[in-house]
Length: 437
Image (cartoon, rainbow, N blue to C red; front, side, top):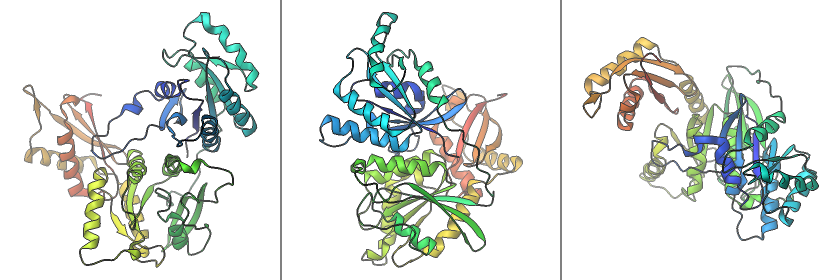
């Protein structure tokens, strides 16, 4: 089930990013322990009153050298398309500007719920500054201070009231949901067409042609699959595909609803920064991951080409060392038949649960081979190990002091667990808990 989406929109310097950071809290400052993850701060998760939701900060979307009003319109269009609820931030100190009025008109016509936040109301004496913003026609303005965290509770109360009532999808547990993600023009739509065997997605070599998420169910060798493709014709007049970050927003919606995420690379163009951004989100979401190198038929090859390209992928995607790599061609359908059993294997590993006694034996054997680390004379002691979750497999170590579990030793334990149980294609999360927690 996809989480609701709240988008923050407004002209520059009204405090959008400060409010974004306040709402998402420390989630934005999480540092991935594995090097190579490229973070993009325009999108994060938050929770309020037991509602989990995603937040888009359009202040992080850079749209070239266009004039201010054009940029505001483009950012607002992204919000309108992506969000269930839009939070429109204005500056209470400066009052209404032409840019505010331009965005307000666009939001008013969108038929999306809009919550109006008047920022920089830092004390009660400034409360009266909010009243002029009624003239924007958006609704009741809410006084807030992003810098001091004032009024954000009232703002979020108004936001969650607009969230759609989404019931959990009642789907066959045996169905494997997978998505194809990647930057524009890597061949995602061509792969969808080849997988489904029919031209149900319009294919173009113009970057950004494909849009809205489409689900298609099919059966292969008795296994039921649902493919989630960020596909559909681009709406005329929309220009926000000019920013590469837009493809990240599209991918994130598909990632959330997938069991397995296929990260598609373009063999002709090689690996660029945007590939790492998109793939990083799949990893952070804890999904099963397969790396697909498409357009392999277009490459001049010798007996070393595939191995060299695979090494490049490993070097660029250090955090995806668990993900299998497959070289295919959507055009010729080369090796495409090997994708289905690989997706099924990764989905199975993503849901794999290990018996507690077996898991304890493996970890204790690993500790015997490589004793736990010490810090200032205090040694980490692992008392008990158990798997606490699947999708992804999450393993809890009950220890004397969680601070003593260094990254390097966590990685060592993960490697030993993978050597024993495989877990091909799925991340493993290892958490340290204090004994008796």
